[in-house]
Every structure is written in C-alpha cells, then in structure tokens.
Length: 266
Ligand SMILES: Cc1cc2nc3c(=O)[nH]c(=O)nc-3n(C[C@H](O)[C@H](O)[C@H](O)COP(=O)(O)OP(=O)(O)OC[C@H]3O[C@@H](n4cnc5c(N)ncnc54)[C@H](O)[C@@H]3O)c2cc1C
Image (cartoon, rainbow, N blue to C red):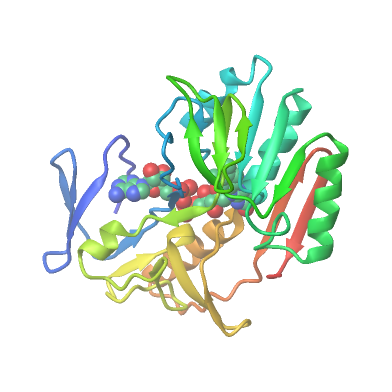
C-alpha cells in the first residue's frame, strides 16, 4: 500500500467491526491495522477568566505564532507551572527582558521529573536570572476586563500581570479510543508490541500507557525519543515482526545556556 498523508481533517469514528475509520470531512477508509498516535493536549485548569486573550497554552505551532508577537513589548508574565515547559518559557522570556513569575503548587520546580538536588540547581539558576519563583501556591482566578490584568491565588493574593501562560501538564487524547470501547487508563494501554485491547489497533507515543519491564511499571511518556522509538516498534509489529518495546527513557531541556540530559526515570 502507498503511504499517503491527509491534512486538515480529524478522524471522528472508528468502526471496529467493519475495520473502517470515518473522517469529519465525510471520507472513510478501511484498514487491516490501525495506529492511534493522537498525542496530548495541554491541561487547561478551567479557571474563571481562562477565556481572556492573554491566557495562553503552549502546545502547537499556532500557539507559538500567537505568543511570539505578544512578547515584542515589555510584559509582566505569570507562568502557572514550574515543569519543563514553564521553566523553558521563563528562561526565554527573561532573555527577552520580560518580568517573569512562576507559580508552582509543589515545594520545588520540576517536582515530577527530577531529584531534589536538580530542582534546587534550577531554582537557583532561575532566581539568579531574575525570575520570581513562588512555591506552594495555586492560581484560582484570572482577572481582567477584555484582557488579562491579574491572577488571583487561592490564598486571595492578587498578582498583577498582562500575560498568563498555563503549563500544568498534558492530557492524553484518548476520546477516539474510548468511544469505541478500547481500554483507556490515563492513556491508551498497549502491550510491549504496541497493541491495544483490539489486536488490529495499535497505539504509539504520548497517548499510550505501556509496560516498562525494566521498572516493573506501566508508564506514559511525553518525549520525542519515546514518540519516535515507539512508533518504529509499532511499525515493526504491524509488519509482523516480534517486538518487545522496553526503552531506557531519555529527556533533555534547554534553559538559558544550560542543557540538561537525563537517561532513565528519576
Ligand atoms: C512546548 C513543548 C515542548 C516540548 N519539548 C520537548 C523536548 O524538549 N524534548 C522532548 O523529548 N519532548 C518535548 N516535548 C514533548 C513532545 O513534543 C511530544 O512528546 C511529542 O510531540 C509527542 O508526539 P506524538 O506524535 O505522540 O503527539 P503530537 O506531536 O501531539 O501529535 C499528535 C497529532 O495527532 C493529531 N490528532 C489528534 N487527534 C486526532 C484525530 N482524531 N484525527 C486526526 N488527527 C488527530 C493532533 O492534531 C497532532 O498533530 C515538548 C512538548 C511541548 C508541548
């Protein structure tokens, strides 16, 4: 079969019995094997005021195209979330001369992904560059009349700002799988050969939860390395090869002039 790409439409339904997918533009295609690689979307918090212009997620190229011109004038930026994305944006925004405050509800940055010593290293790095880090705080309301004016914390404290970037993790796009009765559990569970609970349907990358035998866990990874390697494993399995996907995860992050590289899970 030829490899074809089709842009600008969504797969809206899967007919498992008929082995066909239905697209939102009315077209439909049959399959022998189907791969779900639907990725994730930003967790949006659903705070009052989240629909104000100036309250922004960061996921797609369109999000970047929207953000870039907003950074051409001096800004007071609040970043909700001290994970990789929040801190990388903080570093870039400080480099451009903006005032930046990071709100993190845990007691340290990168809490989910690195050990305390590394969190301390990055906290020191950011504060030395002028980023204000606030720990143990949660955003409750985004205030503004037509545009963002402040973030109110659950404590009632009000922080004036004119841009709010939300970087509090991602939610796997599992609705399509769930709608046709595939197992779903914070991701689409697959086996070591990337098969879902339907043997004709495979899944790969950010949207999957897979067995990591070396850790004795099932995990969901959001990384380019995993997206590429698991996709290759899925392709081999679809072609009938024996596959046992059990990667050593690795990650990187660029903040200021510092590059972090991690092999394995913290
Ligand atoms: C700001 C940011 C910075 C990052 N930096 C790093 C980094 O430095 N290093 C790193 O390793 N990782 C990084 N990541 C994570 C990395 O981008 C992801 O792990 C990777 O993109 C996952 O690939 P994917 O194919 O699973 O999902 P995606 O890249 O999200 O692709 C999924 C695609 O599926 C499409 N789709 C979804 N549902 C449907 C449907 N029903 N019909 C048709 N199409 C559909 C979506 O539109 C999307 O294009 C970063 C992520 C973000 C958001």
